[in-house]
Length: 199
Image (tube, rainbow, N blue to C red):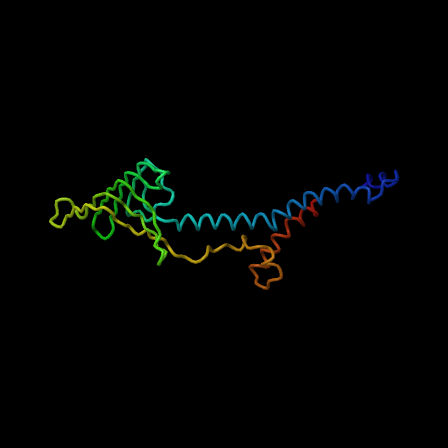
């Protein structure tokens, strides 16, 4: 308690002590406010969009050449030996599909992705290959040679990604009467305010 009296007796008033603290508060509090009110919600939204895009990717997006890859739903496997950039085609393609209690294997020399101009549907068009269908040794087992064979790439159609409240822009939650949004607003402003209290 006596330090403040001694400092005041030496001619150093309260404004002289508060000035460096105010500068510190403006620097640190500004950085914390930027993170709390803008950067953290933005990071949450970006993360949700990345997760949404990953979950809704097509069956062959993210192809790694030289590796067996499982399809998104786990009902099939595909293998691409290499990608020819000059021709924009996958070479030496193997596709296995085990849906509907019937095994299907397709082996092709080349494959390319195409989009139907009328419907917008995406297809993987395999060229110069053989399709094996059914159980080996069964009477309905079929072997079909083809010059061109199209496989429709199934894509999940979902609404826009659902972003949690902590990812909503601050301008969207300010002034709301919803208790959840009021709580989030108070949580965000509490961080820079607490810096001032601590200083």
